[in-house]
Amino acid sequence: MKWINVNEKYLDYLRAFEGRIPRTDYGSDKYKPFFGILFETEDFYYITQVSHAQPRHQKMKKQPDFFKIYDPQVLSRLIAVVNLNYMFPIPKNEVTPFVKKDIGTYRTFKSEEEKSKYIDLLDSEMKMINTMNLSDAAKDLYEKKYAFPDSRVSQRCLDYKVLEEYAKKWKIEK
Image 1 (cartoon, helix red, strand yellow):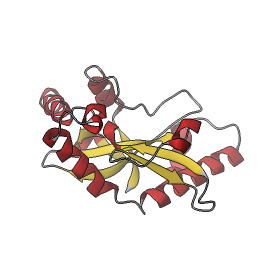
Image 2 (cartoon, rainbow, N blue to C red):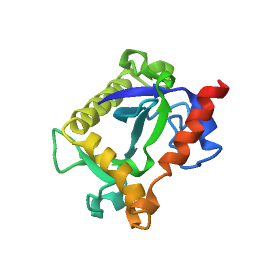
Image 3 (tube, rainbow, N blue to C red):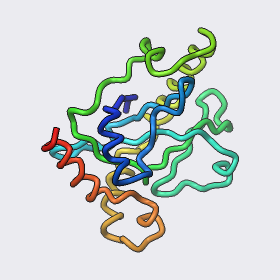
């Protein structure tokens, strides 16, 4: 897995149909890149992003769609979570690499120290993400969404097949 960027116009397009599509830009001093590739189909990559750890996440248990990311230096410190239920398809041509040295083009920092700490956080998150088996978990979640549509987990998930149809329309209209 690696950090990636996605065409913002494509994200805005998808949000017109599904408001739970995650954002990357939360203001000039906040930015959350996506990561992947969780898995790919013939036309699309499936991706998601991390969410900031909240106090409520401490009590939550691992689920087929919910994973905790702990600090690799202090394994008891929760630093982020992954909600696979919010994964979504992107046309393969709408992804670009996330380049750490260009992080200043994505968000502002008050100091070089703050910038360095943010890059360290991204590195720590990705280190832990790469120890998890998120690709298989994502594929399983996709399949279970449609095999067991009435399950609680399935109800939390985006409708991946509907989003694939919108992604196909995007490719045609573009």
